[in-house]
Length: 330
Image 1: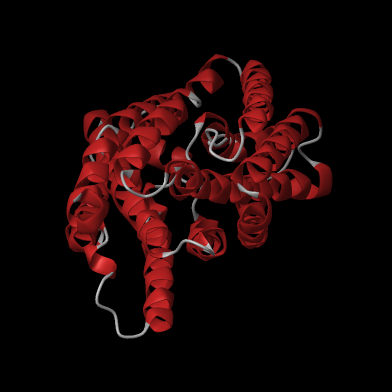
Image 2: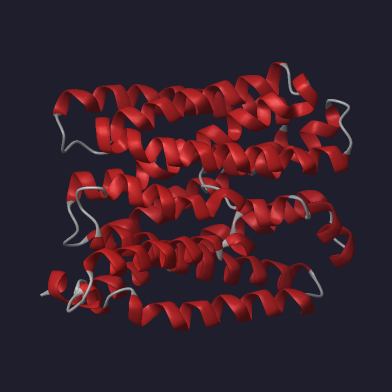
């Protein structure tokens, strides 16, 4: 019954090709619209936010982590609703909710209200709109799911995957570049190279997922993640920060598509909304904790991130021996 309900939005279409294109475009726009709630939508404004609200930069990072964790706790509920009523019925109310969250940002006045703002943004943008948009693709497409999902995730070229390591790296981008002697304006400009690379990597990884499956592409993404951490540790100023930005963008594109496609590849679509809701909580809980290590020591934090990446890669390699339906790499 849940499969039938979740697929109700996709039934009774006159032109499958045209409807498929509309689904892909709608998902693209939906994921792109999550930008205000994505880490890249916040990272460039950490210092101005701190100055405007009257709190320290470290406190903003703590509030962002808390808001991320509390906001993502709504993901399982969104997942169950997607399984029950389908994505189309949820798009409008979630978009309205995200708009209200963005509006509330204009009246934030202290630390408590800033924390609430982060909760609202993460809940509506990540737990809500991002989950619903990618689920539309998983419900509609099968044979070319990886390629179409790649087009959807292209909308996140100005947005970024929220997990412990890349969330922390993006939040720390401006500070890390400044420590390497790169000015704030140039550091923010380099983000353009990162998002461009992410877009290209996203398209390429969609084709690779269709050809080789999600897990090998996920392992490639983890290798790129390790390279980006090593780059910011040892040579952040190479090319004015361009090398680090390119590696970071490539990693995000690879991991976004491999993770989203991998869930459908391994578990099917019958209960995929609920499964994605649960994995969102797990993944974004890591994103909430990741930036906290920066408060202790950026150097120590990067070492921790590199260690976590190696552990993830080892688990991914181990999963290859269990065949096509093994748990995907995130």
